[in-house]
Image 1 (cartoon, rainbow, N blue to C red):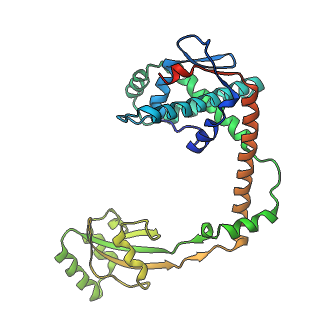
Image 2: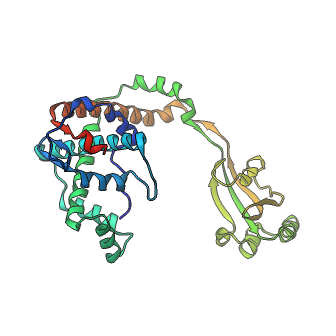
Length: 312
């Protein structure tokens, strides 16, 4: 089973880390329970297993204050997930059998039946227990999507100030379409360049002599922008369309490039960017609404944490 991404990014975790005032650090819990969320309890063993699986990379050792901070942040994320699931069940929001089956299939597709069973067993879980956890994750994500959807209208007048304040976001980099011949020997590359200068077709020599997988397409590398390929490739941005480079050495071999097409950098006009800006502003407003809604749920929930057990 691949390591699942948390439904909140780390900024969200840190945001809610500062909301412990909504619950309390109290004693009185059973000795093996790390937190109670309303009527639901989480045992320390279950918390530790999830914490290691979701937060700690294999072989990574964390201790002291850093470990305590990570545990508190992850516990807060877990508390939020439990509150979301409880609210989903209260309001009748469900995950359909089809949605659950699709999610299970997505996780299982990379493993054989035996490998998948071993993965589940190595985490000390049964298949049914794992499915319950997956369903809760899907429920929490569904609640977040519903609560984050901004139902109001974003005023067009908000778009232009955003555009003017974020011009760099709407600057498109130059793009080139390039063919290459790459060989392992420098002298061979020089001889190939001589043949090209005498008029032999680049595509033909690339298909016959190049070591790269793109040789089947006459050496066509497709389009790319500066920084998307190894540094040696950026030499093509100073070339004219139709030009053939000199031999260029890289860690991968000896290259000859032909520039097929070039698009210069340009600033996306406001009218062209407007729809994207309104979508982004709507997303941001939705995030604000979600935080307010979640804060209200937290304030209504009874959260009791065994701090000593958590940090033991």
